[in-house]
Length: 402
Ligand SMILES: *Cc1c(COP(=O)(O)O)cnc(C)c1O
Image (cartoon, rainbow, N blue to C red; front, side, top):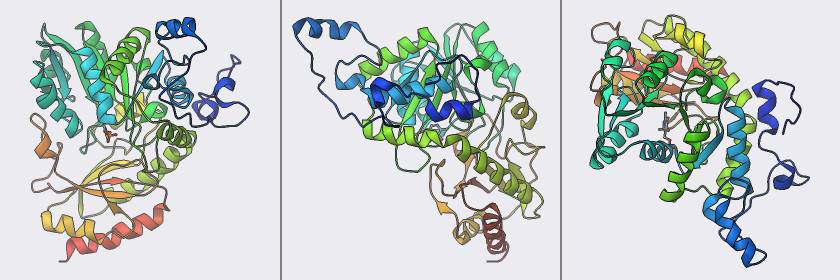
């Protein structure tokens, strides 16, 4: 822990965040405290147990033990403005935990039309079943967004950049409008992480991350988190306990290990992604590169204004061609795995069809040429960027020639 009051950069904070003498002893990393039962000295101590519902107080396994507490504390230290962080068994569980904290039957929740598909399904499935009405909005149209609020709007769920289509929206403005309307704003901040976008400092009420992606960073665990100020953190924590959400200490230790190198991994994959996106933007086979870090991309100016970092995830749309050509391209890649998810050290490619998950926004994003429709999402890992470019170049020949 940084006990001195000297302000330090996130790269410095991340190295020691969450480390406490009483949790780690003399070793660098907290041991894996596997625990369901916590034992009490006597009946008086037992009676005290439930009264102190906070990280750092032993009670019972569902409230975690030092390994989970160290991870939650580290994430809180990296999120300026946060009073605490709740851990969930996956990113989707984190989103569900947050929405089930905020919403009651009869409420309306506004969900960005370009949100991650399982987030949309949570709105139309789970929440709808519970009497909550989901309404989808175009986050690039602030006027329509403002008009979408009504008396019953309790929460707004945003994601930036948009899932698959990668357009960036004006998050501070959207958070401000939500606050004016008396709604809680929630951001799925998985893409940038707290290192790339300080959500609470930009007016967002709750910042959610799928730790499965960047924080885990090695494609071997699933976990989610939600960080918030004091009042909302207390509500999230209570609800998570009511829902029985808990993460294993083994996974928490892996996530903490991943977290230590997050800063350098993101820096490297962001630079490689930018190199590859720039190279792609000059290729005749490519209609649009959808990458907020790339000058000229949708929302690039907002990204530059509000974000301190990016990551290796971006998409592109072919100029013309058909689905078979797009699939030939993906199949011809040798250095890219084909798979969902992202944020690991290995590069991935995914054929995308966002039109299946949109009700308001156009695909591909305007301005698109007629016939540009088939896209691919790249998750750039830690391989050499020139090797990845060479691989993409040979796969583009497969795209052009059956
Ligand atoms: C992967 C992902 C999630 C869900 O995380 P899981 O751990 O897979 O449940 C949520 N939001 C975004 C933006 C994601 O990419």
